[in-house]
Length: 406
Length: 231
Picture (tube, rainbow over the protein chains, first blue to last red):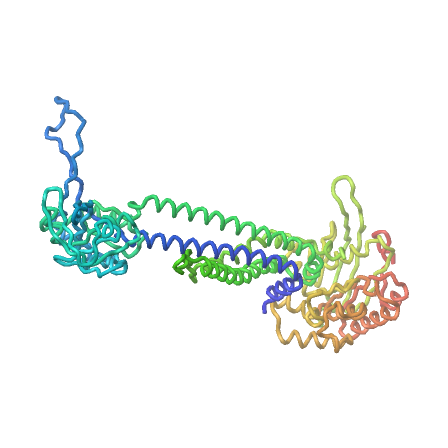
């Protein structure tokens, strides 16, 4: 064993109480960080998962209809600058099949699904409800939103006559599996469908409004024959959705909206949660560092005689420096290993005890190797850094004074 | 020891002065000390307390620099050397025996004796263990090798310190009142041991003592009074 290591270890072993206090500080600090990180990561993942459970990562729509000036303004002619915006009518994406093929060919895109959506009324007996028609290609759509997993009754099987509606709509209309519902649009087109499945996506508004029918039925009802109103896309890297959406919009000439923009509030929430968690972690690390530094300073003073003897025996200043830096590093590393254990235990215990009424954990916890490695690395570096001041002090000790002070 | 050290003195001090304190109050501790130690000498350094014995010993031990004058250790002029060089030279050339032994309490007797070798080589080796064990046997502590210093008597601790001073085989051993806190019988034995080692290995010894009885047994006596050598 190298002499620095040997001396560092012995000094740590000899100063039992001090080492214990330093280790305790690191264990608690790392424990808190691990606990916090895994909890927040878990929470954020589950929020994002829930949010994206009913959404595509990004949605491509035709560009907005714009009012154009008929007269070009020039120097001799003043033209009113007040141009009224046009109402946006339901339009199809031009050459959507080709656009879809292009999107599918991109490596960052994992699924593409066409959608024809528009307003309608659902009528059953005397009940009339306003709904959103969702004309889909079942196979493609389920790759984006896992509808089959949301089914409460029946199954998600969309065909010419079979449709799926949400639980709340079913209740409002008094409809159950096998019942017929008439869909009617504002301009009088209508079609009758049979309820083949009832879903609960976890969002009441969607449960009340979504009616899944085939692409063709929706095209007929909404007078959009052969067209689609939007294309849903999922991408490989969730958090690159915004970037990709900008790129796709520029390349296809369509408008693209990512889930991050659609859920801007959520993103702000997640970001500020991250920021506060980083802040807490930073101050936890700082206080652990102060703890190590103050204990080591005392230990340097107590060990000054030994340091003096070592210096007299030909131990260089640099070696003394290393001995104390190593002590900090060892405390950091060993403390963080225990701290990871403590944090992991704590968070699993927490996840096991805090349960929803149905037995699922309230806080979905994420324990990742990467987090442990980062925690251990940060703690070790913190240990070394906080040992810097004591180590310099030890290295500067005057051996004569140190030996004389018995 | 190699033969070349016979021609080169182990240590040569020329007109060494030391003063403490800056602006205003300065205390002159040493006033022009010139001194040569040849290989194999067993020298006593005596003098009343406050005469500058310890300061002189620290300067010779390269633990503090003289204010003026030159110190040549083994042919190396130390005045121009830097901290690192001095530390290395100290490790190779000088063994210390302190009054209060100054062993490292968290290491066993054997490890304490190995310490100078470990510091020199940067790591622990089995060979060091063999040499340290041999030295401890020589000082009569064969059965106490794995004891921590706290479990040893004062005389035994001082024996460990002597073995440690010998470990790196330095040409010069400085002993600062090695028998200062021992009873007469133990002091006699320690002194005898030092003298024997000197005879066996030809190592130069400079022993600070205030015990004239012991000093008389040395081959040379240097008396220091008020920072000057008087005899």
